[in-house]
Length: 117
Image (cartoon, rainbow, N blue to C red; front, side):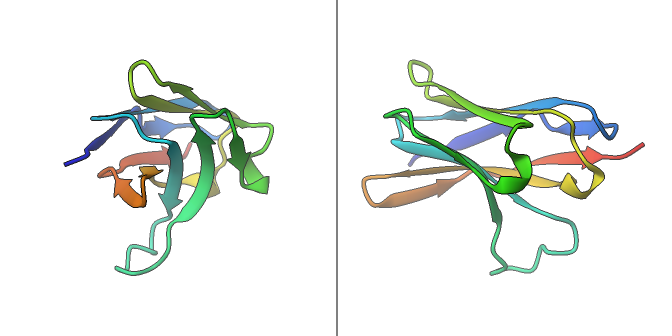
């Protein structure tokens, strides 16, 4: 069973930075980060896709994070990272690592990011 384990969340002031890490138990073609804001934890509600990266070097971001967030990978270690700069209070959310490949989709348990002064 494929497992994804996130780390790196925490409390940061507005304008600050955090780096999230996700380690997969195996190599996965597409890896990315999603988030779900407080008050939207109802099962079935969609998470918001923040950034994704493929093993072929393709990356994509939602418009609101472009220029502030950077997704990167270390395929030798089956890891994906999300460097988040200039964080905003409205980006407080639980951030989830996502993996897609071979017709399967995997999720981590999530890591909380709280942006507050």
